[in-house]
Image 1 (cartoon, rainbow, N blue to C red):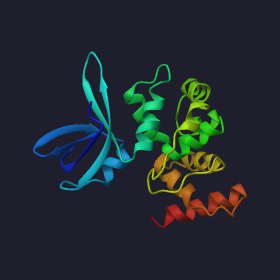
Image 2: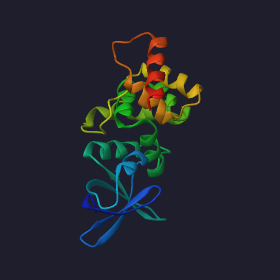
Image 3: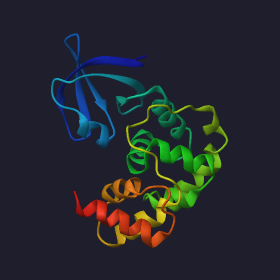
Image 4: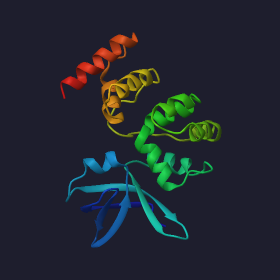
Length: 193
């Protein structure tokens, strides 16, 4: 079983990277945010989940063991396959997912575009198991607080993308607590980009 790869980025595709490891190319599927950071020729290390099914054998790559463990935990939920699990991580991010699960907050998951049934199932099936996972070094961005959900929803209502809304919500200092002021700060952040 393949658990770890270190090599150079040979090609980038829409949802995967071809990693050259000592002359052998491995196609590794990754989250879009991680893929966007990579350039051809970059040397990277990836922690791998090797998925074997009747239809295909696929590699899924993560920048930390904690992220991979969270992905594998998502796979234990009924109705969540590897593509769905990767999609969930792309929508919400590892730290926010951990926080929502630890607080059994399905509404926070729905804020990020996860369907109501899946959000409830994630909370019911994972809220106890997630305590065993330690997610360190998951991305360089600060985690969102659950209070940022209202800011994100307001910005999405104004036509901003989920990614833009999340970045703007992260930029708001934690000492600003009033919702209208948080939204104003987020809008100022977006106007400077």
